[in-house]
Image (cartoon, rainbow, N blue to C red; front, side, top):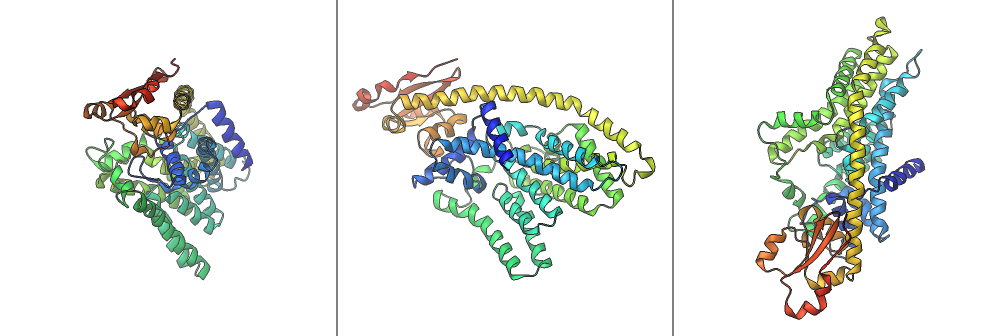
Length: 452
């Protein structure tokens, strides 16, 4: 674990990453609870998982952001590690070719990191990688017989995505049926109560609706238009190119031929997640591709096992012992163009992260230069563009919903505002509709940060 923390901290420093809209929203939740002023009516929609981290991190003051970024990156690192472990275990022993399970693990670990948009989500400190890590850890724990820990990981994942509730519920019921002890029953019941309690109790206390997460997610611009089933499948397939899809298909076929019930159960779980996503799409929720990264990661781990079976010459390839490695090599070579594309994209994303860091640091600097959050708020409501609403909220000690995001409408209504307008990697701060009584006090706020 120390190695994961070290790698994560190094990545945060080298990439110079910063949170984006959701990430800063998570940080705001932690800060505002300390001020007894949390309001979850605004975006991002409430998720308990990041709050478990950003609340205690808020006690550290300015270190909160860095700790959360390190946690988000650690989720990605752990996701790769657990994908490798799952692929290794599903491959099983390979007499005569002991390297096969290790190659399977390396393939799966790198494959998870290469999921489309995965690195982008990590670089903006979103919570998706943590959910992926929790679910893959759950699979790994089940494979080694650590049932209680598996259930715990499913509960943790359920605090990040509602799709995981089904798996925590089913696994919990299975544990209660197979391990009929009072301690097991108590653990499962407490865990299953904890999930909805954490999802709904805090919004009930801090928003206009206990179901605010679902309300905010309804009828977004990203909803699927047309056939929902086709749309979900299309978005799921967009997470990886055809060669990886073929590797996954080969792995499923081999699992069927091998009558490998364990692997097929893992595949069925990934398919069930997609079925749930289809149901969400019909309800009016977005079902965007990043909500399907979890089953994609599971299928990448299965694909890694498929590579392991091909390399080991395992049944049913035993009679064609040398065909498997040839097929495996061909599939891996077919993934080389996608790998090169991911490497190019990674460099581009890191460059963008550094530009974003420059902007965010300049925002913090210009707010400090003008007297801090209290001086800003004394002169009007902070307003910015939608993409920077949570960032301005974080640095002005406000809930996200208390920061305006329609400058034109605010000015037209005559609202007294302090506008933070992004400009050339910097910020223009302007006052609008300021009453005469505050002009002497607030005139210095009309300023610019560094640009370029």
